[in-house]
Length: 185
Length: 185
DNA sequence: ACAAAACTTGAGGGCACCCTCGACTTAGCT
DNA sequence: AGCTAAGTCGAGGGTGCCCTCAAGTTTTGT
Image (tube, each protein chain N blue to C red):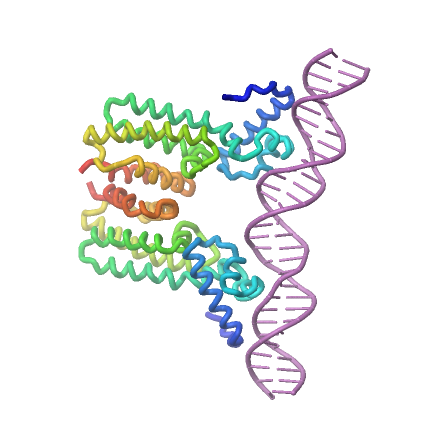
């Protein structure tokens, strides 16, 4: 349902791209809370132009992250293809947090609710769908403790977001300890 | 080395107490970042008076938390008295995070460095001392995986701080999963 | 009761961020 | 080339927090 309004003028289209590039870089590097002014400056465009294109921070996020979040589907599919359900689940976790560790913005997104970015929310739901299946299978396979739930994984994700933020070198070890705790008795 | 300057005037002493009480309450409830204005208002005192008594936020924190952090010694001693070293360690973790869950300010303190509050830092060091002994004993007792270190526990503490912040009902379960992962192979 | 010292007050300056809007510039059509 | 809709610009108003300081008030010692 993209409103197919008249195409942007050439210069406007160029500015829009510069803004998206700047925001992508800065979100990844400094997280979702970079000042709007910084984004505009980095794009070499005025603050007014930024707001013309993206009246709210959420719209900017919505313009950028659906693509980034497609990576979730990729790692989800990859894990689903793994014949060993426990291994699949563990690999999924590892890939997911590796992704978060590479992109501070993604890390922020997965750790917060952003109620006003529906496309982002739905991508997260898709991710949760994958996760849920992987959990179910891993339990059925006897590898994962039977009381594990998607809620637990949401909690883990927020915890991991924090660990990634302030000890980026530590997250893999932290995760591996936690994963040990997940084996079925 | 408390500078034994002339005693405070009666009204000043009263205000100081009101400020400490207000800050204690607000830190516990809303964390270390409550606006200074809120603290002053809550104490029914002007912002100027707050700054007269505590020129920086750190000094206010330093005036309040050493006492709070004494609780760390208590749970440390309690755990040290436990004859089963694995059990001692697990109980220590549980008590520690229960403490954090009750006091948002304490939670913040244990999750950040506050380089300008030496008394707080030293209390944390004392706590780390307890933790280190409990870890060593639990490893020696064969319960705890032998590669566990105080660094791991610091990481855990930051992770727990986050979990406590945004899913206060979930922390105990999260911890128990993690602790399962800590058993010696 | 008085004066000096101690203390309190809150308006206000500074800063960082948010976002708007009227005046200017430019792409793109004819 | 000239017109106009589309786009750009950035000063500036709003908010929330930080912290200071000159003017006024209260305590306390004599």
